[in-house]
Length: 207
Image 1: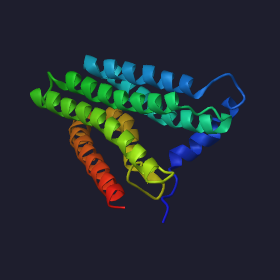
Image 2 (image 1 turned 180 degrees about the horizontal axis):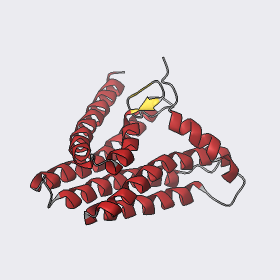
Image 3 (image 1 turned 180 degrees about the vertical axis):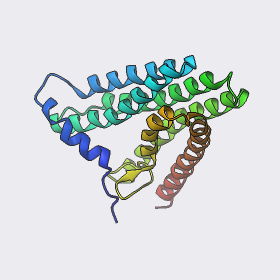
Image 4 (image 1 turned 90 degrees about the vertical axis):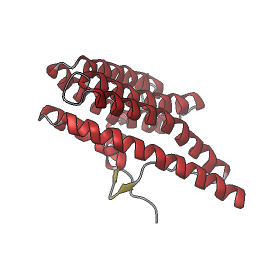
């Protein structure tokens, strides 16, 4: 049974249509999201409450816009190998920047050195998951599957969609527990991608 297409991807496909006939290309959108997530990471790292509020909104918007480049590439027929890797790279760097920024920003707070642990674990997991997810895509392609493994999901919502609550939890003062939970969650997700890659590769060899 096929998984329901995520709601954010559906809305992105609709909203990006006006850009289909413009000069804007998917890599332009990806580059903008890169600037946004790096800026967000820096803002989080300051530990300033007001800047953290801006950082949360900026990061969430960037993650939503991440769906625009792929949909724009489909509409324009401008997909490329570079764009594929660029998008993956920006996704991994974005989450790493988020966790590093949160770790530094909470370092001198109640979490103390635990903040650096959660931040480091989250950043490392994001970068490792970047590699394993690309490996999963390649393994599935070699196995003759036309789909990537994606994120676990249900009823049009993916695991990654949990990042959208970053903005409200930050604005309402619950960023610290969310950060701790996200650091643990990112590590568990990383382990899941490693397991998935190993399972797919073993299945390919067996067949």
